[in-house]
Image (cartoon, rainbow over all chains, first blue to last red; front, side, top):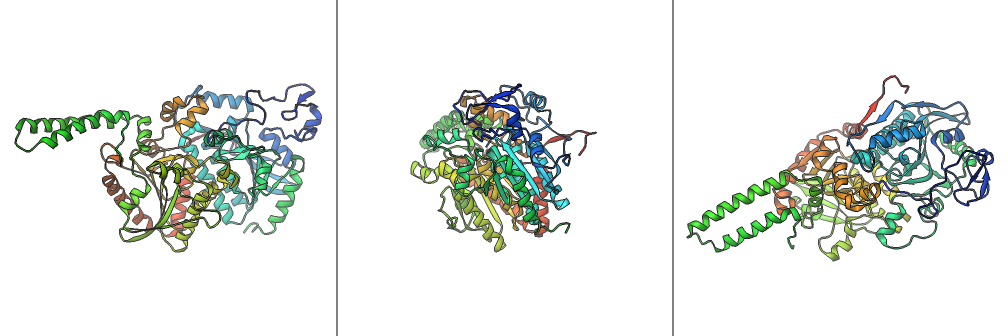
Length: 284
Length: 324
């Protein structure tokens, strides 16, 4: 379920983090690009349209109205219930991720407005242990669905995750059931759930809430799938076709509603929310 | 069925064979022989108890995957009076790793759905080693809806290494198929009883595993990823599977503690594979008990209970003094 992920480039080549300085190299086209220009473009390469992975807070900034985001659920932290150690202790991995991201967990939940429309949102952060879903992520995503239900507001979830968190064992698997159960209740109340898939969305996150949107949107080029490409290659002992498990492949196979570029996301969300909100039983 | 054995079973099997030989020559006249048989019998009992009361999680993993272990259809034959298989997802094809149909449990009608591994090579290939494609999960969902419509309870049997990781499976939406089942099972308006009989492999197992009560056979396993998969990712070495099995705590006893499983079904001494009938008899009694208590609940209460069960699952800490 939890799988290892590879970038589209050849293996072994380290992912280029956006360094300090004015010029950076694009992960995809390897062109040297002007950093402020990339940032203005919401971290999309102006040369090749490659969508850089971005931290959760940045995503919230780019998709919601300024100053409207109010976080809830940031009092939750993971516990090491299995006293799990692989090459590192799980507790150390958590500490490192906290330090790296300044966040307590791999998801941020809260309320916000999009062009004045009230929403509830969950945003996964790939920088925090690969956006993996352990008990805290499951709890917060489920809670966001419940809050949306209580407030009778649409729910928006941005996914970016390798899947369930191995270090929390079978309990992390159960978070797939927990989040899906919460979404079932939201759906019973006729409230919209929009799922936005970003690079990557795989494993237990893809196989639970991410694929349950009334509307599923993906960023261009995002890797989306149940099993990781390497696992599939090893199983079937074949090379995978070009573009396999990319957003465009999923659109072609009828698995997602649309691919929307980051710069066009906010207006598109607004349009969908306005359309669906009309049939939502606001306050009923 | 050819009896196969695991490394740690070998000393027991060797002694059993020896006992079998002695019994064959015993005509009731040789007092010494009788004594030796009695002694050997006692010794086997002692060794078996020793081995089976100190099983490691990796040994339990091997038992869960034992080639002689009873599979879904073995339990179906042994526990249910009638079985009428129904096929297909009505959209793409029938997926043989998932079996479903009408059955009768002590006179009560139930719909059963489960994963079937193959016993011999031909059957293994036909059943895709128990790894379902999306259409298998969609068939399962269709049958669950049928159960809801006709107000019949559902029993599911879990025994899979995982959902099939293949090109076609991805093209046809493996993740969506699993996710859909999780959502629909959470709100299905009929009792769902889940039995983990062998390998509970990840999301592919959970896609049949959301229910009101979860039973787990004593030597079954249930995990977020296979020990081999976990080892390959975290240690980059599948040989560390044994360590991974220990780390992830995937046995019935572990999962009962974590609240993932409600009830452990004891297996005959030496494991279910040593006596299919005895294993099935114990399971049957448990299924009858569980179903009759679930049947007594009004549907809204059943659904609230099911929701609360999954809503509460998990361990975390809440820091005082923070917002939210």
